[in-house]
Image (tube, rainbow, N blue to C red):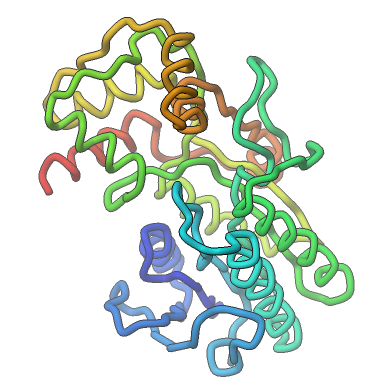
Amino acid sequence: MKVLITGANGFVGRAVCRRLAVEGWALRGALRRQTALEPGIEPVHIAEIGPATDWRAALEGVEAVVHLAARVHVMQDKSADPLAAFRLVNRDGSLHLAEAAAAAGVKQFLFVSSVKVNGEATEPGRPFRPDDSVVTKDPYGLSKWEAEQGLAVIAARSAMAVTILRPPLVHGPGVGGNLKSLMAVLRKGIPLPLGLVENQRSLLGVDNLADAIACALKDGGRGCETFLLRDGEDVSTPRLIRMLAAGMGKTARLLPVPPVLLRLAGLLTGKGAAVDRLLGSLQLDDHAFRTRFGWSPPVTLEEGLTAMARWFGES
C-alpha cells in the first residue's frame, strides 16, 4: 500500500515513517522545504498547506493518507488573529486535502488531531472520552475540532474511511517545546517548587503514536471514527520530573511549596494558565482504541521518558 504522510520530516512524522517502513509499505512524504527524509521515503514538494494547495502529484497512486502537518499550538501566538491563522491551515487546509484524497480514490484518511479538542484539564477520576461534548475555546483546539466535523461529512458522502486520533502531549527523542525546556532546567539542577503537586496526566510516547497509526492503517477504517490515545499509565508532575532527571543522571530538586501558593503566584504574574498546566490533571480514556484494534502501547511510559531524557542529556 502506498501511503502519503504530511509533515513527514517532523518529530512525529519521522517516527511514523520509520514504523510504517517496517510494514513494507511504499511511503511518500509531503514537504514544503528541501529537507532530508528517512531512507526510502519518496519526497514530493507542495506549497504551504491551505484551501488552494495542489495535491494532485502527491496523491497519485496513494491508498491512504496520514495527515500530521498542522499549524501547531504555541504559548505566545504573535498572529493578529490566531483563530483565523489556525483555521486556514488546520481546518481549511486539512479539509481541502481530504476532499482531494476522496476524489483521487484514497481508501483511508488518518487525521492526527489533539486532546485540546476536549479541553485543558480533567476532574479527578473523570478522564476525557471521545464522545464527550466539546467546549474548547482554545484557537488551536477549535480549529482541529472544526476539521474533525468537516472530515465526518466527507466520510459520510464518500467511500473514504476517516480515522481521527487525539493524542495528549507526545514525548520522545527529538522533542521540542515545553518538555525540552523542562529538561534544560533539570540539567542545570535548578530547584522546582512542585514537590507537593498531586495530579495525574496522560502522555504518549512518539513510538507508541506511530505504532497506533500503523495499527489503524492495517485495519483500513470504518466510516468516521474518533479515538483518544495514551501510554499505558498516567504520571504526576513530580514523578515525571524525577524520571526525566534520572534519565539524565541527575537528581530532581523538588521543593515542597503548597499548590495554592503557586496558583496565586501564577495569577499575580499573568502566568496562571501555564501554572494550571503544571498543577492540574489531564487524563484520557483510550479504552475504545485498545478494544477496537486489540492494541497496547509497545513502549512503557518509563522506557519512553528515559529514552528522551538520555537523548537530551547526550545532546
